[in-house]
Length: 175
Image 1 (cartoon, one colour):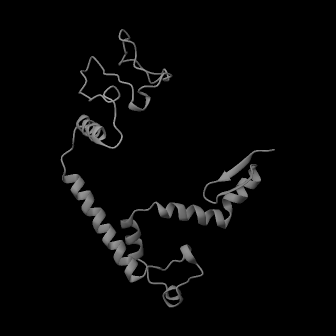
Image 2 (cartoon, rainbow, N blue to C red):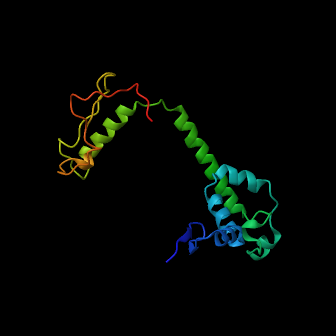
Image 3 (cartoon, rainbow, N blue to C red):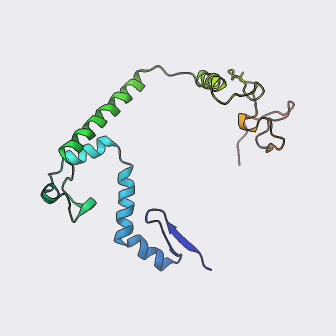
């Protein structure tokens, strides 16, 4: 059995050779699916800006359908959808402003707060598996085993902390 190419946009598989792949990538269905995927990732303010610049689609307003669908150059936004999009943009901007106005917190404090909440939560953690993080000294890094590996006999060597006598050469270059 030969190799198959799976297209994530179209959710279909076909024999992987140059001709089949080129034909698929140039097909209208693939182009539409790819465009729909990237359109789903756009933020609300970009969508609103584009929709405000378009005229309303007469066919869509009259019948609720348009033969051009996503590729129509006119807007398919109803006034209700447009209002909801404006509200979403306003709320996103408000949330961004509140995040900017908050003082930046120390990551060590955030981790300690999370560990304290976790210790009080539904899943009790043993004291051996949860250690409070302290700010490390520059010359002595602190190494601990992650909570998910606590109590396991076969921990991968890459996760284990280095032996006490090992020196970490911080100034060395890789490669």
